[in-house]
Length: 484
Ligand code: AMP
Ligand code: MG
Image (cartoon, rainbow, N blue to C red; front, side):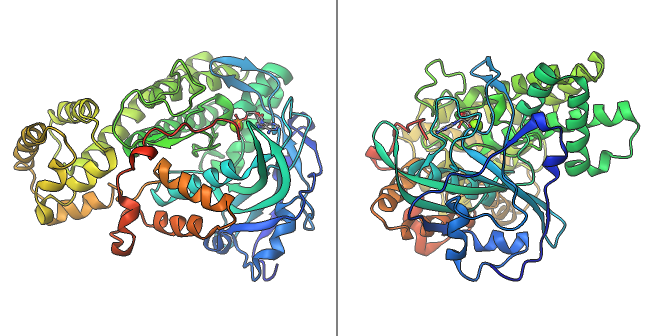
């Protein structure tokens, strides 16, 4: 490692010690660098001349000077049931750094071995799920959706038992913050009002600096409103790209509104409003069309954890911001996707009817909006071809083009803007599955190639046309194991 331009701090350690336990990573054997995010490293203020310098850190075999690993304590609601026994069961917060642009980064080593919060787990992460997290965090970032990031990942020889024996891996995940809604639930339900207040002030001073100078009551109220709004906007952004998180427990909700903890997630292929990507979620609690409501329920859990230090009225008012922020963002996202700049009252019904049509006719969600973004240049066929019953497409296109007549933007200008919000390339499940298989056979190049494509999801990439293909039949309804 060389020429670092970052400052090391470990502000999390300023919190009361009930919030963490110091734990040394348990080293993995014969680790090998799988993928290293050089662009991100540069933004964070360091240059990795040799990737392999970092392998030992990823393997938990070496700590750099200043690293002081801790397992964070939090609790949370899992599938609606409160679990007091959560915490970093296999991840460690190594340190925090601040880059040349003043941005802070938590470094979290996921797969580092057992901690006091491991419960029945082995503290490890497998190659398959680590690649999935790497791919999706970078895909979301490419789409402009707030997310934790992947700095680098390693694989190792150690066998890990899941449904079968798998390969161990570890990810250095970075984010402005790793504090979850569940941290507040822990403080409120197990420690006391003072610790909720300390945690809240910590989060404000690090991540909401614009609120610092407000008077006490107002500072807290405004902060909660902002957390609620960020959460609502993040989920409206998920809905717009067809992203299903899969495990929206309150311990997987980031306090700064990042998409957090990628497990059995999926991007929709054929549009299916009730799509459930997590096959252990039998009731469909976290189905695609339930996500906006679940985001609100998680904000309610957070609200409850704030009651020891905030008056009920302002918490209630804060919660009301959810619906407003969600609706406004969702409507804006969908107007942008359809290229509607001159707002009309009937837009919402056009949007809802569009969703119903896509659902009923099993139309590929991403391909549909991308085809709409090229209507001028390529005509109706790319849209029509997505429908078994072409007459459905024709009827809809007629209505859509009539609506476009009341637009004042030039057609090419509109479609240029639409191509900036309707991705051509998304992380389809089958693409992830393919690169995982190659990686399991020791070839990480396909994963890197896919990552490169997903860096620029809105650009035409003629040489990468194949990545925009609709899923083959085998790739349409993959059962993604929730074990990770
Ligand atoms: P998740 O479902 O990945 O969000 O994790 C829920 C809880 O289980 C968290 O406290 C994790 O740290 C913990 N956990 C998940 N997998 C493991 C594992 N293999 N070993 C220990 N703890 C784990
Ligand atoms: Mg989690």
